[in-house]
Image 1 (cartoon, one colour):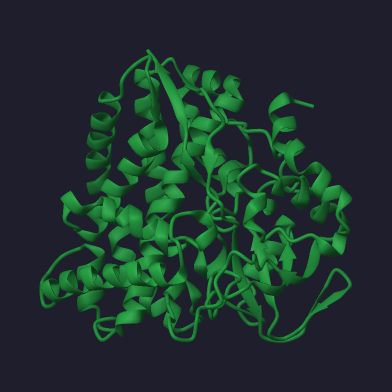
Image 2 (cartoon, one colour; image 1 turned 45 degrees about the horizontal axis):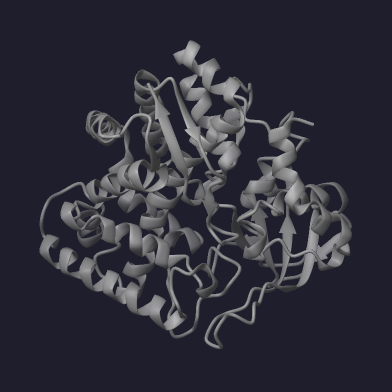
Amino acid sequence: MNQAINDIFSPGYDHAYNTPLADLDVSDPTLWPNQAMWAVFKRLRDEDPLHYCKDGWNSIARGPEDEAVGPYWSVTRYEDIIAIDTDHQRFSSEPFITLQNPAEDFPLPMFIAMDQPKHDIQRQTVAPVVASPSLSRMSELIRERTQTVLNQIPLNEEFDWVNTVSIELTTMMLATLFDFPFEDRRKLTRWSDVATASPETGIVESETQRRAELMECVEYFMNLWQQRVGKEGHDLITLLANGENTRDMEPMEYLGNLILLIVGGNDTTRNSMSGSVYGSHLFPSEWEKVRANRDLIPNAVSEIIRWQTPLAYMRRTALEDVDMHGKTIKAGDKIAMWYASGNRDERKFDDPDTLLFDRKNARNHISFGFGIHRCFGNRLAEMQLQILWEEMLQRFSKIEVIAEPRRNISSFVKGYTEMKVICRR
């Protein structure tokens, strides 16, 4: 077995294969920082592709106000995920995108967790910000900023790639999309982290703190909203504030959609940027392959997004009884569509745990979701990553990851909190 693949699987092998199948719970966030979930996914795909967990993760570290995961189904094979993700008649996107239900006293409605027709109405309001004309205008700005950030990197010296490059580039892009005060742009990073955090992550100490910080977020954005009512503009706030179907949005729905747009524009791209460096460290021949043939960059970007899968799953709720793999999902049951597992399904991708920049079907990944909820910013994310790779390859002969990165304690946001590297000319 390739050493890189062995390193991926060895941490979780004993847990995955020595735990009774019925007791496996891949929603447990403690499995994810050391990559122990990969072996669990492998066993589930092979032995129990529709897996019922009778009692999803509920750590005693969580406070009494926190919502436990509770019972849920795991769908881990590629084709099954697509079947559910495109079946909007029997599977609902409401009420939320994660396995925890939103608290009754702190609802966060967002269009990704809405069904037709409201989903389409709200999505269409903000879609122009990532339409082709907007992307063309933004490409030059993205390249300029990428050049500036990479030019400031100290050669042959250790630094944190996550903070210096991934967070900085994505936060600058978010500030542009919102026309957000540039000097305050790191607030967006903080709110993105807080939005998906629970106490065991160390990001917040309690659900009370998390809610307080998110209310600061909505207060800040409400001020921007009020400034832009009646104004013309192509940023997300102006579009929402003046859209016929969104201008009367309640504050909590505004907050929910802000969190969706912040997390969607921040966590996903930033963790793919970090994952691309880590992946090319594990598989150094791929760096050399694309360095020798820059035409591979677009396909390499798709492969990076497949291999990283920055958002590990999305939830659906069954609207009626559904039979699958000889079992019955009951109406009202929660389902986790594990995109991270589907993107490593051997039935779809040969040698799926290996990063292959010339993989023929890399673009068939499901990291952006499928169907009506497919990520509407996918082309922007791809463009940011493509420009980053073009500029990296012009400057560096290699990027060495000098220590195992620190990862999120989360089964939802699959990413990195620190990655120490050295860039060589």
